[in-house]
Amino acid sequence: MADIDTIDSRVVYKNKWLTLREDKIRRKSGSEGIYGVVEKPDFAIILPIEGDTVYLVEQYRYTIKQRQLELPQGAWESHPDADPAQLAAGELKEETGLSAREMIYVGYQYLAYGFCDQGYHIYIAKGLTQGEQQLDCEEEDLRIVTMTLETLKTKIITGEIKDASTCNAVGLAILKGFI
Image 1 (cartoon, rainbow, N blue to C red):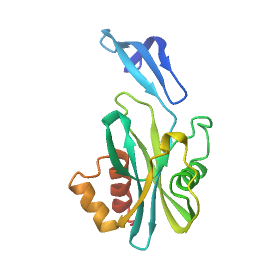
Image 2 (cartoon, rainbow, N blue to C red):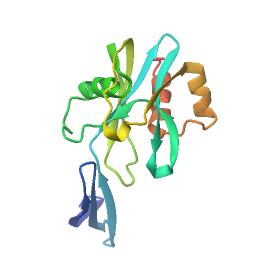
Image 3 (cartoon, one colour):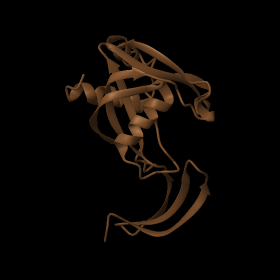
Image 4 (cartoon, rainbow, N blue to C red):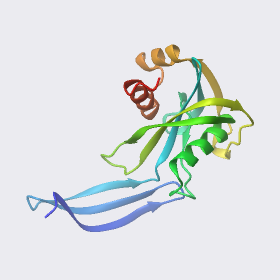
């Protein structure tokens, strides 16, 4: 017997971005319970850096009713099995207009595996060339913001940047010696 067996599963809600599933489970002890599971396709997050300049985006995040700074990131819901490197390059181009000569793979992390199966691939983009943004309608208020790496670190430390995947991507890139 696995640590937890799924007895039953049903889709509670679904749209083009996510599926919400409720699973009836049985624990090793025999006790039963439920898990609410959010299914979302993996995404890519990109740390574009040229010299000491980092490119971020700022946009309004409806769920928290605030504009926030974060690294460019996104998923292709219509193509969830896309190659992560292509996804990263595509999202970088879409949100910032930047193309990168070099994409360095940093690693893979889960976003919040206590309730969601979504993970993300982290890339560093170097050798940047500026082009035109190709924003989706959901991103119409997105702005590109540049800052030094030291300023980015300070904004993470002080809590001005609160996006967990951005904080994690920068931290992992530093810990692995990429930046």
